[in-house]
Image 1 (tube, one colour):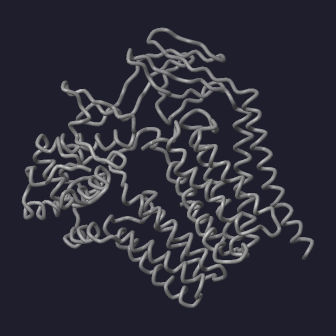
Image 2 (image 1 turned 135 degrees about the vertical axis):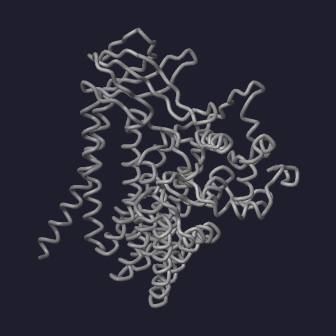
Image 3 (image 1 turned 30 degrees about the horizontal axis):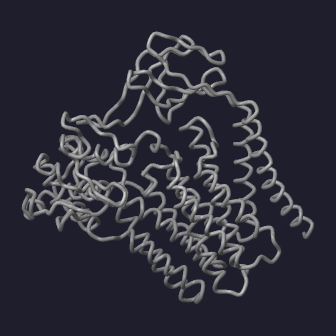
Amino acid sequence: MRLIKLLARSSQLLLLHLSFLLIALGGVTTWLTARESRVALVPGMPVERYGVSIELLRFQTEYYPGGDVPRDYVSYLLVNGAEMTVSVNRPLAVGGCRIYQQGYTPEGCSIVSIRQDASGTALTFIGFALFFIGGLLSLFRRRRGVAVAIVVAAFSTLTVSASDLPTVSEAEADSLARTQVVYRGRVATFSTVAHDFMKKVHGEKYFCGLSAERAVASIWKFPEQWSDATMIQVGAEYRSFAEFFDERGRYLAPGDASVDERVGLMLLLRSNQLFSEPGEADARLSAAQVEGEIVYNTLPLTLIAFVLLFIAAVTAFFASKWGRIVGWVAFLFQLTVILFESWLSGRGPFASMFETLQFLAAAVALISLLIGGLRGVGLLVSGCMALVAHLQAMNPIVTPLMPVLHSPWLSLHVSLVMTSYAIFVVVAILALQTRGGDNRCRQLLRVAVYLLGLGICTGAVWANESWGRYWGWDPKETWALITFLIYCIPLHLRRPSRWWYVVPLLSVAMTYFGVNYMQSLHSYG
């Protein structure tokens, strides 16, 4: 039995270290053998690269309805005699090459890159897969219950005063709030549209004391008068809709995809295209569901859910019995919120990353409560997932994201990385409370390093789809790797000092905050 355990441990370590070797070998192979050509395609003038013939038939910029804010860039190509389409985040694979939409010129030429790197990418991605398997087996070996929980977790000012603006009455806004509209593919209340719009565009539900319903209804009814209202969030400041257009009505692009999206939402609302009236075939909400949406939009349910889970986790670390009780309360509350949302939408909680994260947070909490052991760790992971879900609820998807951000890898990548950062902070706090890094710190650190590694891997896959390369030594990528390597050191030390759990937080801070002051492809606002 002891020999079997030893062999099992050796196989896990072998997989992990073999994954690092393959990733490094893949990187070297890419460096030595990859070929890439960046060309500006002119209609009617074919070019040939690496045995692939490409001719631009036409280039098209897709805009948000009602204005000239760009939403996507599409090139219609003739590739080796066949008509094909390439756009941002949707590369073409032809003849061992991949073609990526990179940009365009003011003259209407399309800028694409043709990349050839099958061997290096394949080796690297095999390494990613081995890292996932090896790390998973390692977590199972340590704490089966925590491993299950973590696997589940991984899938988952200056303003214009309102008195200076024309507004609808409170009675009109209250009546309009209960009006049913078609929004994001389903029938919902105007209240839901208003709250999503305000959280996305303004960052808060209220503007100058006006409720979301009253503010959005006023913009909709008096679009021109509201053009100068400084309510569009740009970093820590606010700007008006009018500031993004010159005297001829041409859009002044701020160079920030998230701001482009907010301006686009204003255009949709002003042009009456953000929502529509239900048709005869559309299923209407019941009176109870209408009132339920009003209540849901008013109460901070997602905030309460993650706060309860974090309280349960902290309590479990110091008083296991009370932690279990609070944990069950938090789980039941999260489950109630999920059931409430499912009743309002008329379907299960799996249609979006926000809903999936909530479901998985509840699942993690339940597993932790039933299995025991490191109950606090499981509840902590559950709380981190509920926190990410809450942050997504505060930044809802109202319209399609800018192309580079409109990817299923985005939510998974960000969720993994942010959860690992949260656990790094908890590890540091626990280490400071003890004379040395105890076993809890090592166990938590193992989980956090694994999640960060998965976050880096998923980010690389996403970059390969969006930018045409899985690694480019961008400041964000580089510091994420540095953070990963630094935190690997105490995992290889027999008795690491507690400072090995605390000082590396500086690297986390640099990765999360510091690189924002550098020129980076990760600067999305």
